[in-house]
Image 1 (cartoon, helix red, strand yellow):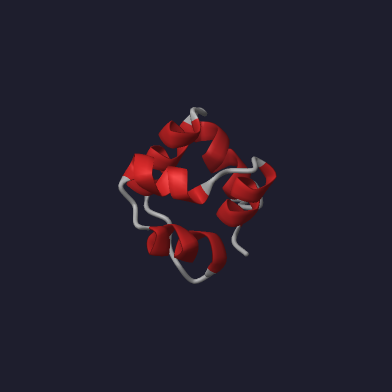
Image 2 (cartoon, helix red, strand yellow):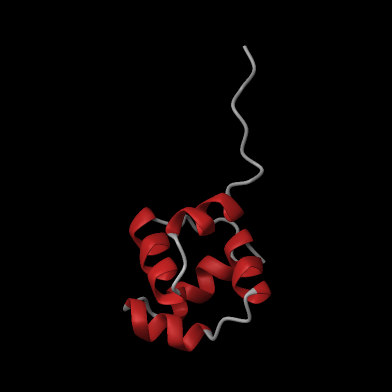
Length: 72
């Protein structure tokens, strides 16, 4: 499961509702939630956040929390 998938699970999100509200297909939402090789686009993240009625930065901070800058 991807970080987005874990986030959606923790929030007890109905993925069918998110797909309907965002216009993303259920297949695409499933790929974003389950396939770690699938890349999330910023417009998809924004639409998902709107559908969940949360600030997009909340979603981004949660799914990107492990990213760090390279130390020089």
